Image 1 (spheres, rainbow, N blue to C red):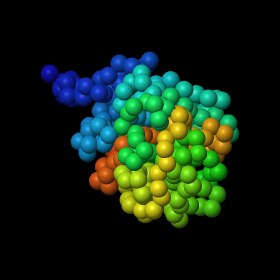
Image 2 (cartoon, rainbow, N blue to C red; image 1 turned 90 degrees about the vertical axis):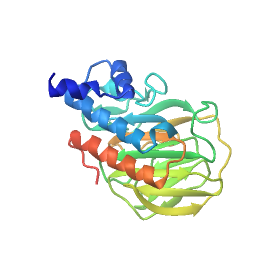
Image 3 (cartoon, helix red, strand yellow; image 1 turned 30 degrees about the vertical axis):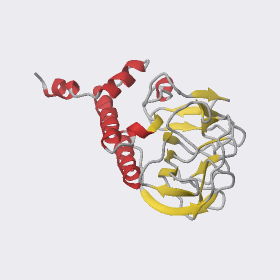
Length: 254
């Protein structure tokens, strides 16, 4: 039996389910890259905590909108024509965004008021007035705002910020009612005392935080996730897994 067949016999069942949900079967090398991503997320325990994982690179627009965690559930819907570029991800086109179809108060998933995480990966270090992920006015993540700060909000009103910018993974987590943690490229940045608020009936969105103010149109969103709170070790592992996934497409992560 060839080495290629031996490798494919070891494809994870989650990878196989994702591939089966796509309109175009990826190349053998792309499947192996996706499988490594899945296994890395499972090995660190992040997989079981997340409601949605969006590997937004690849060559087929419709397939990039499929939820890797549970294909067919919380797949992304285009609103106002955001732009997809093969092997580069999604951008807002000054008006468009992506709806996850996940209502944070009624979905009944892992995402909860005091047990939550949101994360995005971007490939441009560009200031933006709009968020890359969020819902209503109670969650928002901007890797670099107009004041050159990384801004985060998660199940609360108001935002915390810290002087940090750049490409790659940016995440905010909440595991208690009284504080938030910001992470960048797998590294801890700060914990801030911010009390949580009740979850509204709103969908989680990408390329915007509220559906009205969208992210700067030149920023490519390349990966996103949300769910229960990830630990520091898991954030670090997700960053490593994303870096390997992005490198396959020639996208820098740091």
